[in-house]
Every structure is written in structure tokens, then in C-alpha cells.
Amino acid sequence: MEKQYKLRNGPGPAEFRQKLNIIMVLVSLALLVLTVRLWHLQVIKGDELKQRSENNAVRFRKIQPLRGLVMDRNGRVIAENRPSFDVLFMPTKGVDPEALVQKIKDIYKTRSVDYSSDQPFPKSFKSYLPVRLEKNVGMEKVALVETNSVDLPGVYVDVTPIRLYQEGEFLAPIIGYTGEVSKEELEKSEEYTFGDITGKSGIEKVYDTYIRGRRGNELIEVNARGKVIKSLGRIDPVAGSNVVLTIDLALQKAAWEAFGDLSGAAVAMDPRDGSILAMVSLPSYDPNVFNSGIARDEWLKLLKNPLNPLSNKAISGQYPPGSTYKLIVAAAALEEGVVKPETTINCNGSFQLGNRVYHCWNKHGHGSVNLHRALVQSCDVYFYTVGKMLGVDTIAKYAKRFGLGDLTGIELAHEKKGIVPTRDWKQARMKEPWQLGETISISIGQGFNLTTPLQLAQAYGALANGGTLWRPHLVKRIELSDGTVEKEYLREKTGELAFSRRTMDAINRGLWAVVNEPGGTGARARIPNADVCGKTGTSQVVSLSQDARIRRLKKLSAIHKDHALFACYAPMKSPEIVVAVIAENAGGGGAVAAPIARQILNAYFEGKQKSKAPQVAVYPLPAGVSANGVTPE
Image 1 (tube, rainbow, N blue to C red):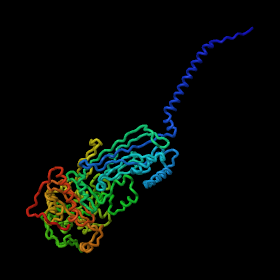
Image 2 (tube, one colour):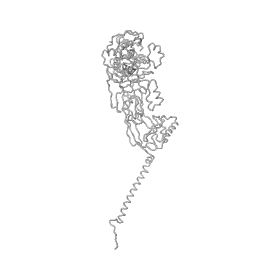
Image 3 (cartoon, rainbow, N blue to C red):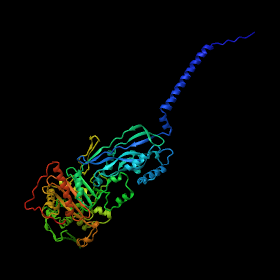
Image 4 (cartoon, rainbow, N blue to C red):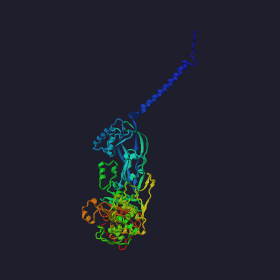
């Protein structure tokens, strides 16, 4: 029997051909889309893809923010920003950095230009971060790099902001300077990254958190030669806040110019709130030299200069206060009841203690003097006698009330405390008992006494304002870039003299007389109608007896000559400015420091007149008092 087979549910020939045609159409459409896509990539996007095929890469670029401005109390700009041109290298595959640097040097040589960086190319670096080759280059180098860009793969010029200090050296001790963040700073804070700019000293450092702003970032695409193709994303930087100082720029200039060629320091302060109107320290330095990286030999020259241009002597210079200290001894004597204003002591030119003789600056003596005349003529014998009666520890107690021997708390770093000696201090420091002769020396501001010009200004300011010690401060307020006040600094009380009215009046009248009565040692600080009150001082740098000093004066080297001091305030009845001056190795306080203070005071009162501020009240001289007279101290 023959078997028969039959296909079940299979497509017929017509149905199979129909499905095949559909498949062919779909395949054709796919090929057409692919062809169009290839044409688009090769023709339309060909150049872009060609660039990407040449090892295109994504790089990260930091954008430095503009640091906030620093201004004086009247809004005059002291520190601002200017563009700096840096030569950078974007690490590029196949490019030898050492050879590239040599090529740049060769290009510079064609124009007799030196390669400024003496730093070797870093041994390790990140491929996505640029490496700076040179900082703050001139326009000639910018032109050479740009015109030779084809031969310098990965090298480009970037524009970043750097500081411009308009007034240069005479504000440097206050403002400070900026520089690249150090390795130590990077390790201490995660806020910094390599290459960031930060404050290195002064206001720039103390208020860096406010001033520096917030950096921006950008992702960029570069080709094989390191040239930027496009930006892939950007976060804009945020400018820093502006710092408004209490400094008056015009008064600052006047204080600087008043010193001429002398070295030293001066502080002008408002005794009503502790705001610093001027603060100079000489010699100084130009902070702009740090913008491009100071050369090693220039840095060493600054460090080794015996006149210490890098230090702010107004806060860190420690000097014997000399006769300016007699103010404190006088206050202690009156408050302790050791003497009364009318108590007289005879000065014959010397004071004997055991086998030792202590001389008055006036070898012929001042005769019988009370407290008033002792201050006016700065009689040493009077204060030797009073100091012996008080004792070292009592004198120290009152010195500390005036704020001596402690930090004032001003915003700047490296402030020094000075020294107010006591019996315990000497025992702890030198393992020796206190000697009575040492009390005699400190009674006129010599011996172990050390004071900073700022402390002296604060002390005299407390007497001027009726007895309050205000913390000295340099910053008035901090503003956002749009002028909105971010933070305002108010006066801060740190102490109180708590003296009787009788003591305050007696000392005030005495200090007024030092400047305005005949024979007053501060006559050269006199300003008509300004009622200046002050005290001169001359502090010995080397310890010699008076006779030996006279014989050897001409042989003393410059660094061994006396320091000249003067501290004052004005006007008497409503003081609004206090000035402390020290001129190093310059001689007598009355002859040298008082005229410097006078120039500062003149500038202050003339500035008030120009701004149409209330005029200084006129207080007539007492009956029978001449406007003439000056004595050596």
C-alpha cells in the first residue's frame, strides 16, 4: 500500500514571496538610514570628528575669583585687582615637557627675553590639570607665546587677577600681601587647592576668608595639541567681600612723610572708640613684588635687613618707654597717696642710692618741683624719689591698668606684649631677686620696661577719654561687592583706669603744660588753638652713666643712639586723636619725635577743615604763660 504525505499549515508560494518582499523593504530602509548617518558623520560632522579622533580630551580649569577691595574709611581704594598673564601648559600626549620648556626659552632668546621661572618642571602632575610655567609675564612674552602657538603644543596664555597695592610700601605693614597657597596651608585646610591665592600677612591674611571669594570651575575640551575646542560646562567665580578700614589715607601719608629718612613707627588713634586712623612702620617694603614671586636674593635681603622692614614695629617693636612712662608713675603716686599735686621734691641734678648716683637729664637740677613742674620739665630726680616710695609691684599694678604688658587685641598677627617688670617676674625669668636700684630705673621708663607704640597710644587714649581702654581696631566694616554691609565692627571696652577726678585733672593739666607752658619739653608739638597734651621721652639703647654718655656720644654708632618718643592727644577738653611716635636711634623726644607728632596732628586738623567738619575749639593760654620755650628732652 502506497503512503501519501500532506503538508499541514505551511505557506504557499505566493504568501512566502510577499513576506520576503517586506523583509527586503525593511533591510533597504535600514541600509538607507545607515547610509544617511554615515554621510552625516563624514560630511556634516567630518571636521569635528576628525578633531576628536586626534586624541581629544576633557580638561578641568579653575577660574580665580576677584579678591575683595580694601578701602580706607572714606572709600578710597588701597588694594584692588589687575589682570595677570600666566603661561600654562596643558599636559598633552606625546609632548615632552622638558623639551617644550627649552623650546620656549629658545623662542624668548630671539627677542633677548629671559625665561623667568627658575623652578624645574614638576615630576608628577595630573593629566587633566594645567601646569603653570610662568607667572605674571609681560605683553612681549604673551605675544611670543601666541605667535608661536603652532610650535608649542599644549601651551597657552591665561588671564588671572592679582593684587595691585596703590600706595605701595607705606601701607604694607597693615595690608600685607598675597601669594600662592603653600604646601602647609594645603595640608591644613581642604578649602584650598594647588595654585589658589591667599593672604600671607596683614589684613590680607586675617580677613582672607572674607576677601578671597569663591573660585569658579570650567570643563573644557581640548585637542591633541592642547588647544581649547569648546566649554562643556562652567561655574562662575564669586567675588570676595570688600574690607573698609578705619585708616584715613591722607593722614597715613602725612605720618609716613613726617619721618623723612628716619626709621621707627607711629600710631594715630581715635580715643573715643579705639579706631586706628594711621599706623606706619619704617622702613617698609613694596607688597607688589610678591605678585610674581619674589626672587630669593631679594627675599633674603629683606629678611637680613637690621631695620626689619618686614615687621610692623607699631605692634611688634618693643622699646623702653622712657619718660612717657612718667605718666603712669604720676598716676600711681597720686592714687596711692604717696604725694599730692602740691608736694615738692628738690632736684639738685642727681639722686643717690647707696654707692650709686642716678643723674637727672638736667645736670644742674630743677630745684624744688611739684608734680606739675616735674611733668613739664620731665625731672628725673622727682620720679626716682616717687618710684622708690611706690615700689616696683605698685608701679606695675598701675601700668597694667593702662594696658601695658598685655596684648591690645588688634586684628593683626605678631603683636607683642612688652614687659611690665615685677619682683615675681624677675625671679621667674632670671632666678634673681629684685634690686632697689632697678626700681629707680623703671621709674623713668628704663630698665626692664618694654612697650609697643600701639600700647602707648592706647594708654594715653585712656587718659584722654576719661579712663576707658578701647580695643584698638583697624576694620570699620565688611561689605559685599554690591555695597551691602556684611559685618560692622563696633567699639569694644577692654579695661578701665578707675582713677579719681583729681588724679585725672592733675595729669591732664600737667601734660597740657608739657607742650604749652614755658620750658615744657614738648613745645615743638605745639599747635595754635589745638591744645595738644603730651609727654616726651628719650630711651637709652645702651646703658651708660650720663658722664660716660656725654664723653662717648660722638663715638656711638647709629644703632646705639637713643630712641626718641612722644605721646600726645588733642584737643584737651574733647580729645579726638591720640598719637604715639617712636623714632629709632634719633636722639631726644622733644627735638625729634614731637615735631613728627605735630605734623600728624596738623594733617588731621587740616583734613577736618577741608571736609568742613566742626572746628577745633580754641582754649586760651593761662595768664602769664608764653607761647615760647623748649628744653632738650
